[in-house]
Image (cartoon, rainbow, N blue to C red; front, top):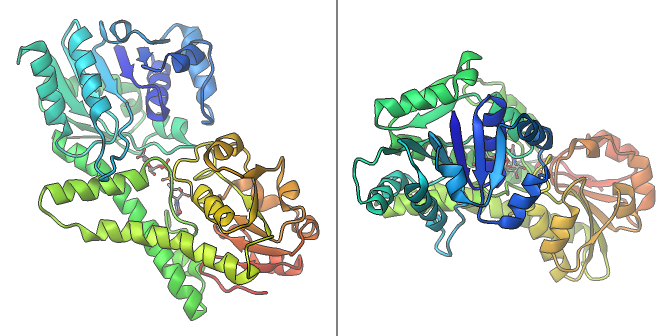
Length: 437
Ligand code: UGA
């Protein structure tokens, strides 16, 4: 099937590559000509495991192309995916200007009956606006352009795996032929046993916000528990394990720490809250999730201040700068916010990250970076674990401790076993677990 994809960011590029790998003929388009040039030259402009290989396979098979000319991408497409950014406005609402522009492009260039699919996360009701735009641009209500919602559930760092083996495919649409086309599109995944959930468009749009907000709720719930555990002398990791043993709760997303970041949860929580307000419902719980998330960062800062006394003249090492492991993305990364606060407080901050150092340096004025964790720790008065990259778990703790000016660790992701830290001579401040100094 011919597929056009508007927007070649994280979601768009993964969509392009996975659909091409399923045998479809995909043409991705982006208004950023530099990005298109990179992709045409077989270069993926961000870190995502497995994606460069998939893009390269797609290009060499002839099934995947990139262009800055929307006509080339959209003209003959049976399905067009809108994968453009929906950043937050100052009010917290989603900025949907790029979605409108994408709809205008489709109306201008589509030459056959086409399914116009929203893949970007959008507030419920957006499809109606997309449909109106298509009709107005075409000046024809029966132009053969039909809207569908097909929200993405992929996670950065495992986006390829999530897209090739999703736990569900969600399609919101109205016309039966649209469901038929979407079933044909995803046929290889459905054949492999993946469940497809078909529903109306508003439900599909809303379900995406509901999922992200609920996952963020689990994280903030655990971070609230961490604050209580610290005061009660209990262990939040053990509490989470006990909770997670109940299948009605589940263990996933119950890891306390510095809180969530990234391009999805912070923005989607705000947009969902604004949508609820616009619809006349005060969904105060959503704002509480954000408040507890902000508090998680403050609690970590407080531990650092408590352990170090004055920040001025202190050297602080940050392990991990990306918002989560497996990515070079530092958007809304807790580590970035923490680095800024520590530098503003007078500390000298040096970070190490397996992938995100150059992005973090661009974001944080005055941030130093080190080639490896030991170099970062060298001469440091405190080390803060900000991102749970798996490789940090295997660090030589004795060597780390010896390299530091003060062997003091604030574990913002609870990646270490307290007993190991103790025998390496560390003062250890984990999150929601008993500290020792
Ligand atoms: C999230 C969702 O998990 C995806 O299902 C969704 O498709 C995506 O947003 C999106 O809307 O595009 P992502 O932002 O890539 O995916 O990353 P997550 O793995 O969800 O992690 C988000 C943040 O929560 C990270 O900062 C992570 O460190 C933090 N987190 C996660 C915790 O603090 N504790 C946990 O227990 C789990």
